[in-house]
Image 1 (cartoon, one colour):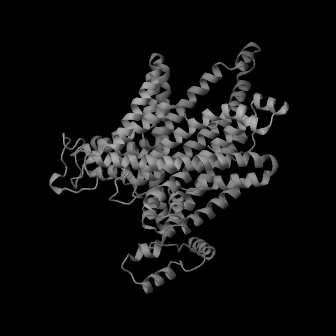
Image 2 (cartoon, rainbow over the protein chains, first blue to last red):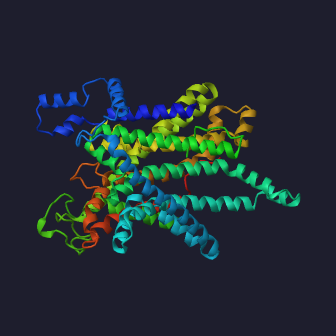
Image 3 (cartoon, each protein chain N blue to C red):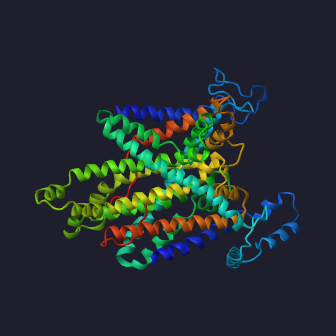
Length: 286
Length: 258
């Protein structure tokens, strides 16, 4: 129930945030436009209406497929699938890179126990590099090596979450190895299935929190890597529209981001409920 | 050893932020793309502006903005977290509604939320501070709340309550030593995140040129990274020195304990 409330409120707040942005008519017409032209443009963009009326107009136009960019006049729902495909490609590369990099970090920890301190320093140093910086550096490496942009973008996106994941896997493995119930299970010869069930229950909440953090990071970070690599996906569309104050595009991409983040939360709670029926849906995310 | 490194790092960053041998805004086309030299330590950019002076100026501005934003964000997040912990005991529905609102705000793209809040107070510095403080609040408040809840369940706190200690005494003698160090650690990491966010906002073009900012300098340097790498390396190294210092100062990652 609260997840539905969160989704509805998120969509509404997205519109409230748009109301707070600078005057789109002024941005569109430029500084030399006269007042009459500005008024006409405001009427066309429904900026002269009250915010609730504008909210309803935007939804109606979106529903009928008539929500258009104020610059290109393209129907946004026609452009959306193409942008989504680019973003999905980057996200898929990001998830793939996340798995490979996390495994690499964990294997490095295991394979070189004597070098753990130095690996930790390397991990810390890598984690502190902002995504726009690592993306810029990777873009030049990709240019020099001929790697496709979307793969390099996925790699840049996965760098920090992989460290988050690998560090947690290591911490959890260490905790399990020294847990009291492992000794009891061994002593009383409890079945492996029951033991596994216990493990899942024990670590489900932490796994959900880390999963949420990674999902939020991927959704937020995709805009930056798309901007750096020049990939025409949803994230870059939103950033470009924010700079140009293209309100309908900001509305559509903002709603899409809010809905996808809410779905991630919902899915996380479903998984938590499946893993552990004692789990209560929580309002504290990542 | 650690303290010496910390002092050296603080001194280095302070010196970098204070030293400006040239005017950071002075354009000199005849000196464009000059490499590092004794006169221009980090070289010059495409308009012949001294990169060392611009980097120092941008760093000082970024640290100031992130610092003020962190102070506001920390204060609001702590107050919000404490209010929700207290509300949870008396007005559960109100606490749940407040949490849903914060969570809903967090599902929105951070650029949109930050920009929208920033527009309420137009101005190159105030806008950025408001944007950063908003992000700080949204991402820190749940962590601080979880920390407070965890501390309230600590045996020493429960014991003090049972023994009838006053609220102020419990706060000073039991809660502050438990929560304080962890909150300060989170605040330092949050400050590092705000420095990175400030650079990111200027990188994507949400600042006002010609005022130098690290992100904008990095963005401008991208086309010249192979021919004039100093344009990229100077600001990158500066940003990394600051972030790495903050990261290794308190190298714990920010997880909510469960």
